[in-house]
Structure formats: structure tokens, C-alpha cells
Amino acid sequence: MTADTSRPALLGGESIRPLGPPDWPLGDEAVLDALREAYADGSWGRYQGGRVARLEQHLAEMHGVEHVLTCGSGTFAVELALRACKIGAGDEVVMAAYDYGGNFLSVHAVGARPVLVDVDADNWNLAPENLAAAIGSATRAILVSHLHGGLVPMREVVELAARHGISVIEDAAQTPGARIEGKQAGTWGDVGVLSFGGSKLLTAGRGGALMTRNAAAAQRARLHLQRGNHICPLSELQAAVLMPQLNRLAHHNARRLHAAQQLAQLLHGATGMTPFRNRPMQESMPVYYKMGFQYDAEAFGIGRERFVAALRAEGIALDEGFRALHVERSPQRWRGVAPLTEAERAHNGTVVLHHPVLLGDDEALAQVAQAVQKIRLQAPLLR
Ligand SMILES: *Cc1c(COP(=O)(O)O)cnc(C)c1O
Figure (cartoon, rainbow, N blue to C red):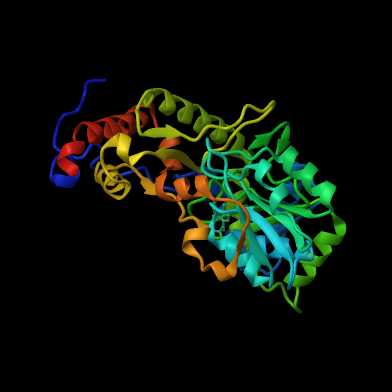
């Protein structure tokens, strides 16, 4: 690749991808067919047309769990999962200090209190070795998310939870179809969660699901959803468009993984922008909703905000990561146990690449690396 020394698009130069990042969702004939079928059989306008039930069945088979309940969003599914595990007032839930903000609020929504632990130095996902010190007499559950291509070693999490007699809720909203030591993400804990939000790998614009092998937990979740009627359902139309996506998920996941590895290669040695690295685990496969990077502003030569703005101007869908919970939320609303050093680094240093480009062609991928390179070379102009 020849070095691009042209002017950054942010400063009025030519953009590397003038049309911007690839769209999501992708055009998909199978989705169109599913919509036509839902129209033809009238299920589009029914409370119950069989499609939601079939989707739940399909998800259950795919994950090897007995019970799948769909609902209106992944965020709501997390709250439901907490209720399914009987988490309530006065209870504590241990979670990573760097996590999806909605999860923190869901813990509060059921009346419980988050206990924040530090994250892994290499992938800024929950680090199991930090859990033990956080577990106290009020702890009832551990809430784990797999984020930005990171995988949390779930075996350690569930073993520790079992020793303490507490529940595990596994948020696989970003990782449908990922594998961790031979098991699917979302099936390690007592209850797992999926999202079908508009940016997610399986999308119906909105929607979520809860998965469990535990009949009593499923029943508690069902009772919460049923108040004379299903209070926060997935619709038949949403179920219709999800089904063909499920059939392609493994294939798309494999392509995205390959692209992420290729991109890591292309960026190799790019100081200041290191892809999240997972611990070596047997029979594991990460899934990329966002591809996470540890951004080092000092090494790169410009602040993160400026870097992200510069990449976006080049037509690359790069964003800052989440704001860490211990920074974002009042200290009265959580308990912390140890220094949250890595979570602090994650707060300041996470950048994420949105997934659609990972299904693009080689050129689209090369443009990402080219744009990073260009901004690195032009960093002095952007300071
Ligand atoms: C998107 C997301 C959710 C919530 O899903 P919605 O369906 O958008 O409410 C939960 N957890 C994680 C980690 C997510 O990325």
C-alpha cells in the first residue's frame, strides 16, 4: 500500500470513502421474501401468527437451551434476566466497570446495586480474577457482557459463581453465535441475553431475547412479561425478518472474523491502535459487532476525539467506546472494590469500528487501514 500523504478530509482534503461507511442492514432478498410471506399469510397483523413461536424454537435449538422468550429490546431482556434470577431490592450485582450503560441502569431498575470490578488489560472486558474480591454477603449475581470482539472466559465465571451460590447473567447482545470453550455465548450463565436492535448483527430494528435452561427462571420471566397481555413483545414482523438472518449468521460471523484478522494484519505494528486481544481459549470464536481497539493518544500523536472525527471524515465508521460506569455514574449508585485502572484506560482509550465494513470486500477493508495510516502521517496537521 502506498502511503497516503494527502490532506485529511477533516481539513477539507479528499475523503478515502466519499460515500461513507457501508449501510446496515444489508439488502437481503430472503428478508424481502419473509416480509412477503408474512403479508400473504396475514401474520403481519396478528398478535400470534406462529412466527415469534418459531423464532423462539429456532433460537432454543441453535443454543441448546430449553427456554427462549423474546421481548421488545435487549435492554429489557437484561432487566428480565435479573428478575428471572430473583434479583431485587438490597441485592448486589457484580459487573465490569466498563460495560454497556443500560446494564447498570437495569440493575438499578430491579432495585439492586452494581458492584464494579476492573477489566482485563488486553481486551477491556470483565476479568474473572477480579470477581472474588467483589463478592460479599449481599451479592446475588454476576452480570457479564462480551464486548467489541472480546470474550470473557466464562468457565472461570460460572465456577466462581457456583462456589458462592450466585447467579450468572450473560449478555451476548454483541456476540450471537460466538463460542467460548466449545459453548455458545449466552448459554454459560443461568440466563443469557440477545439483542435484535437496529445496529446489531441480528436486526429487526428493535427486539431482544432471554435464554435459559432453568424452567423456574423462564417461568418468572414469563410472568413478568404477561400482565393480561404480553407487555413488551417482539412482533410477528420482527420475527419474520430475523429468521433468514439466523440462517446466515454462522457464515457472516466467519466472514467478519476473517476480515477482523485481516485488518489486524494490515494495521500490524500500527503503534497507538491495538486490537483487543483475547486470552487463548480452546474451541473459541469471537464475534464482531464492533471491533475494539486500545487507542493510545500519546503514541498516535492526536487526542482520541480528534482521531475519531478524522477517521469519520474519511468515511470510516469509527466511534469512541462506552464511558466507564465509575466515571459516568454517581458514586452513591455503585460500590467499587479495587482500583479500576484498566476501566479508566478503557474509558479514555477505547475506539470501535462498526461491523458492516467487515462484510465488505478487500478494498473496503484496505481503506480502513489506509485511513488510519493517512491520519497517523498527518497527525501533526490535526493537533
Ligand atoms: C446493544 C446492547 C444491549 C441492548 O440491546 P438493545 O436491544 O439495543 O436494547 C445490551 N448489552 C450490550 C452489550 C449491547 O451492546
